[in-house]
Image 1 (cartoon, rainbow over the protein chains, first blue to last red):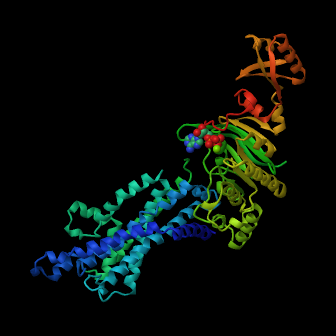
Image 2 (cartoon, chains in turn orange, cyan; image 1 turned 180 degrees about the vertical axis):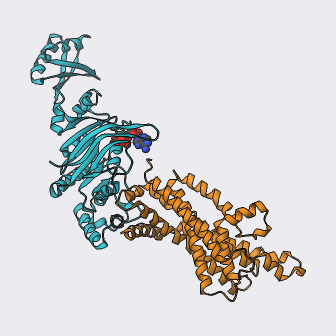
Image 3 (cartoon, protein in one colour; image 1 turned 90 degrees about the vertical axis):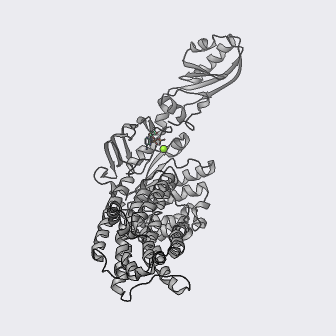
Length: 278
Length: 324
Ligand SMILES: Nc1ncnc2c1ncn2[C@@H]1O[C@H](COP(=O)(O)OP(=O)(O)O)[C@@H](O)[C@H]1O
Ligand SMILES: [Mg+2]
């Protein structure tokens, strides 16, 4: 019954997405460009004198063998955020087109309706993360480009933790932006807000730069950012965890707390929006 | 007769302080077409939105199909179908996909749904268009699709909010026909919001006239019509004296005289008796009678009178453009 309802919502969104996948493409292109332009051009090691040695670089990059590998994982997380930002577009359009009214006028449980949106949008949000992961690794095979270099000991358990981290990260930001989409009065309000949030989310994380090089006030914000938590889980599993304060399990727990809190908050906001009178 | 919808002391105050409903009392009998008739802004959509659990009421008691709105709003949605005032279909989906979507949300198994969907497309004459995108549908087809959606889970009551708005006359007539047949075939109860008097008169068993959030008259169309006393004699004269109005007023049986454009509208209890006297008076006055016609009581006239908006030339209402 509940699965019927969740499935119905997700399926409709999927059909629509198949017919115009534009948002997906444009959202995904940004991180990809970062990856091949910024990631390739910015060679941190080249700035340092030879005497410093690889060990120093590796320790500043928390175990990553080179800057590109460090940065690529940051982009894995960021690509999800870039797509998550569009999560609210469907509910926003559905409200203006009237189909939302039709939807909440059915006997379906209103939490299932939210769950249907969340399911579809979360899956959509996860896809680019895996694509970026695969593409960065694939760059190893293109002569003249640096690719993602990972530790030899990466196994199935590491991949499982990485998977869970990406799921939790996607759930967090998808919930957040879905809620915005449900309550935004118009497109401008929504896109204004999301444009405002995208860069701060990226820059208050350790996606692009090591946390240790930041001022202390920023460091504490960075530690609270779900992007940092997800990135830490992935990096620890890819490069080894000696240099991290916590084990991946702890970061996963923090991340799970975030996503749970954001899902509950979003559910609350969305359910309220179903009774809004305009 | 079984009462299927009951509202008592229903009020609605919107967040901005607007009092949209100021204490409605009405009952709807099972198997009847109940029409809520009123100008734009009278409170029709608000009433329907509350009954269908789309918005919250402020005060009052509502029972829909034996379910108390305060106790179990979700249960109410299982027994009703809604045709909203605006289109609520997904334009990027086909008609069939729209129905499948709603079927999924209504807990129907896909077999039951597919069968019912085919049946509905057949009945509505939408069979050929079932698998094209709704954005290619005409206005009339979209309305039918909305009705199909509302009928999907075999509801006991359907709510129609201005269902023929923006339809051409032929599509309107077709829609009315369908509704009538539907009622006869299934015994379904229909709650209809409209500001079209002809629609209310042709379709409804019972009408409640709503004005500024209050119900000011209810009953079968015939009975409401009879609340208006008398006919209107409409004359056009030339060369009348300035006191013509007063002279006609004094004719025995005349209730009121209003000059509207170049016509005198003479309200009287019985036009058969009064008209000859009026003609006589015109002659005595040396005025020239150019036109004379009699307007019998109509729902339109009753409506205008009951809502206190007076009667106007040839009964044309201003309801089409009146916002609020
Ligand atoms: N969401 C809302 N917020 C504030 N006032 C509203 C809202 N919706 C309707 N109204 C007001 O309530 C009154 C009744 O509106 P409505 O029920 O839509 O009338 P109708 O359907 O008869 O045209 C109108 O004055 C309208 O402006
Ligand atoms: Mg209305």
